[in-house]
Amino acid sequence: MPHIITRRHLIGAAAALALPEFAFAQADLAATPACHDGDAPTVRQTEGPFFKPSSPERADLRDGGPPGRPLDVTGFVVSRSCRPVSHALIDVWQADEHGRYDNRGFRLRGHLFTDEAGRFTLRTIVPGAYEGRTRHIHVKLQAPGRPVLTTQLYFPDEPLNRTDGLFRRELAMRLNQADDRLIGRFDFVLDLG
Image (cartoon, rainbow, N blue to C red; front, side, top):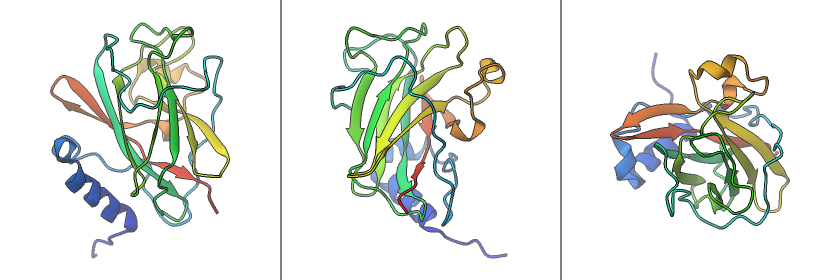
């Protein structure tokens, strides 16, 4: 049976060529979720009590360096018809390696925008778990002029995934080891009609 090349495969190939530092580390990381015309949009989740508006624009949340294991998350923001969403706002916030949020400042908080191909790269650390919650990263996404999608990203194979009532398998990133850091991959699907 011949292999069918989809728009998602072409986008992924373009990303590997455009980001040579990640190409080797991500060679075996498939898109999450796989994009097919008409895919269901990324699952909505609660923003929780720790969201703060007006985060600084930055793709590297390690700037000024909280301790923790480095994590680079890459992916695409696409529509349900697999079209890239350029200049989509991605606002993220997370706990530090001990499971604590910075509620006074903007440590481990920030926002960035996708490029013309709908691609993004976020540099952060692996967040710690805390009582009642497994490791996760909060995300708000917004295509230009469209409603906000609030969700969370999770880590696969975490023991606390089984007991966290908010955990959703379809929101788990694909992860790979690269030297002393983790490389994560997740593609967001927005319901843009």
